[in-house]
Length: 382
Ligand SMILES: NC(=O)c1ccc[n+]([C@@H]2O[C@H](COP(=O)([O-])OP(=O)(O)OC[C@H]3O[C@@H](n4cnc5c(N)ncnc54)[C@H](OP(=O)(O)O)[C@@H]3O)[C@@H](O)[C@H]2O)c1
Image (cartoon, rainbow, N blue to C red; front, side, top):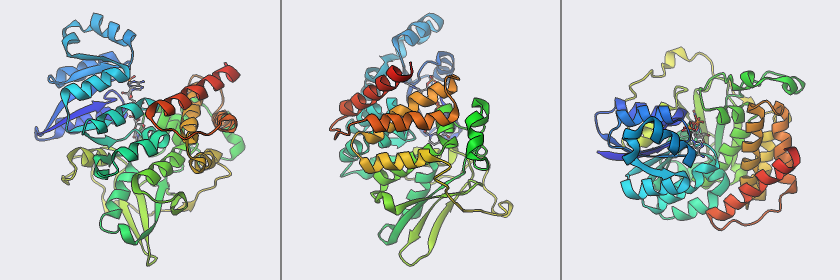
């Protein structure tokens, strides 16, 4: 029996993780659930998993929970980062699935690792913003972090036994909903169009990040920290079918590719049962049905957000945390109709241009850079 806590249980990845736990043979026990503000969905989950303690995002959410679902109050461990810390320390899971979105995921990853729990890491902002700090904690136990992002899961499979002979990592990108659009057309795209990803169904923030390819830049940073390859040894190629999730190029010039369905339950299930490899009980990829596989060079001129992510990664220090904070602010402004799609990149560029890079030594230093970036953008744009 593996004891598992799921952070971000009400989101796209969190719900999929609970589906996997329900479909298992009773060998996963859910001991903790953490949500932001979706109290009704969390209440349903708590009925299904009666041994789970829970936390919520803010005190207001807890007040609503207490008045709507008073019978669940005794299972609360509090709110915010402190609540998640209490949840992890008190329930002592074997595995924490970090499916939180945004910088809110960094502190809980560190708490879980310091408490000796393995982390199935979907929250890419953890490594983008705090990669050096997090990897220092697992320096002697890199297997404590199990990648959930499909590209990194695929890389871990391709690298297995081939690490020494791999000279390049290749991440694939679907190209998102605007791959075939002219850059000028992107000025007027709507929120609905940007959320209409051609191959993946995901939460809103990562879907917008995928539409301007910032997400792919973040994934390069994530791969850099997870696998220890230099940024110049990690390439990106557009692959519209989203069937090959990553490749590695070997010293002898050959490639190893990892293929799978565009279904996050596959990497998620593998991370939850790691190191065991289980049969996938949902729709499997049928190799006969694939047809063609295209690989097209990435046009960085059309998607400058990718280049900004690479520039932040090269600058290092707090720059990637600034990149992420500016993106979180800008995506939220876009989703609420306050700015256009192309302004997301403008905001990120502005924040990076104004930032004085520092060397973060702890989570608080990263959070400080995050806070300053948000204050800077709010002061300029309201
Ligand atoms: N979805 C995918 O297919 C996919 C693929 C690869 C990687 N990822 C990565 O996985 C992470 C999660 O993505 P997602 O698509 O599942 O996001 P999502 O659907 O937006 O879910 C986010 C979860 O985080 C919770 N949350 C948000 N802010 C919070 C806060 N301040 N405190 C506590 N909880 C908070 C939300 O709670 P409420 O809803 O209750 O407010 C929700 O449970 C992201 O880092 C994303 O980049 C996702």
